[in-house]
Length: 298
Ligand code: AMP
Ligand code: MG
Image (cartoon, rainbow, N blue to C red; front, side, top):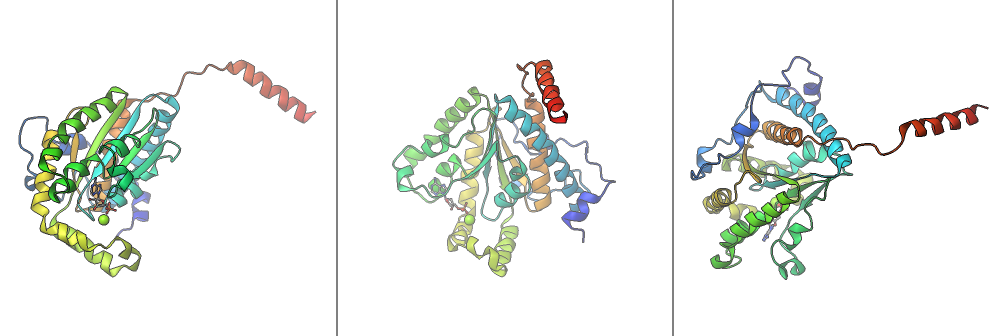
């Protein structure tokens, strides 16, 4: 078995495969119903296997970091990455291996948990809006405003008359962010119930993962179909060119990482952030430098 370390040393892999990850995983912009059942949870894309996928991700991460640095210095555009998934689908792993590789000066991750009493005393977007990226910055949402039409709907936390109004509110909110210059990418990490159960077992077997265990995660498995329907509805109602959904086959961790890295990289390429124009008089600054150097050497 090859390890991640091996993979990055391989030199023969094709690290620029002719494969359109956006085309493969972005939901189509047609009025078709979304059916998650019809979308595979397993995929290898253009890769020969795990080592190839990991080498690709390593390379894509380097380019993402460079483009993010440009975006930070440019200070105009922003990027919002929304992660949604069933438990154990790998949001944390994806953040560790790909999105968290960006420079923390310009990138922050925001986990959204059960709302606090203060958060509950406001509208559902109050806590979300504060976490959206400023000009030049990237925000990664580990769960998001979509919980307010997912867990809230499935667990009956507010009446239907309340949550059903939220889709339009979300669309208008995302439009507002885009209007300010924020690109939005939404990812659903798609795993099979079988793979999820295997990962729950690994958590049981690993004492360092016991903190993640939660009896509620098993209760949610009984409602897998309800969650799927709620996700399908959210994707159908809140999918747009300015804030598209991508369904990422996530049974293979290395493919999950590689495909999201590719889509983020391609988006940043498309945003084409530029290093800022220089106001300073470089000749003058060079003269000052030479003078200091001369003084030092006298
Ligand atoms: P985790 O991401 O595994 O740490 O779990 C966070 C928990 O917070 C999940 O069970 C989410 O469903 C829950 N959660 C997040 N946002 C909301 C929300 N708006 N209302 C209710 N529960 C939420
Ligand atoms: Mg959890």
